[in-house]
Length: 314
Image 1: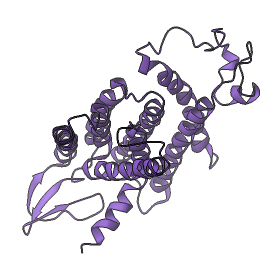
Image 2: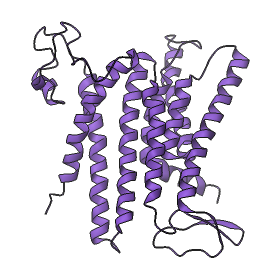
Image 3: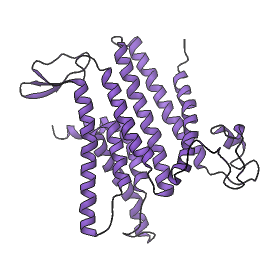
């Protein structure tokens, strides 16, 4: 029998490896460089990094944060990104363990299609975290949000949604029109009487496509209005594409929550700077970094937050 921490440990190890690759992307993509070649090298002495000095997290600790050859200090960003990605993937491992626990000891075993759908959902959140962690750091350091992550993330999110739709149960996520109300049916619940308005796959895929288009349209409108009033750019196109990417993974309302939280975090950061006269109305902020943090929070807590907010109007 597998250890209770096996899935978390496997997720952590895999995340550390992906975090190491993410550091390469962070260093090279904003400069339009290949992430495949050449080999990584020390920015100080330009000596190629040996394989045993490139072990995620461990090598930085053993080298005490300095290059083996020239003793140039290695930024703490490298182990921080590796650790953050590792912890995010460890959470995915914990979710896989919970999925197996529910299947084995829950009220009823999950079907093969339900397990596969669960795997795809967990994979999607893991991929979203990988992309957002990279974008947070890239925007903070360079104020750039590379298309390889934003546009590539949109396509990855939509692909995973289409994959998830394949494994939906016969009535799962479909919308029924019953007594003039839209009702969603889920596994284990009754199927409401009435005519099917949208099947599960149609609802999931079309809903996510509309979320991406709707978020992009809203933000582009805000961007155009700001430029018309202030005669300068406010919201960058990279931020628009980044939020569209979040919508591809999470849907419309979690992305609206991401925008709200990101704006709040950016304001909380900027207001003290303005009060201390270290910034003004023309100072550019790495808004994508705050949106990325908000996106991670939305991936974790959007459902309970949105349910709580909706409950205020009942």
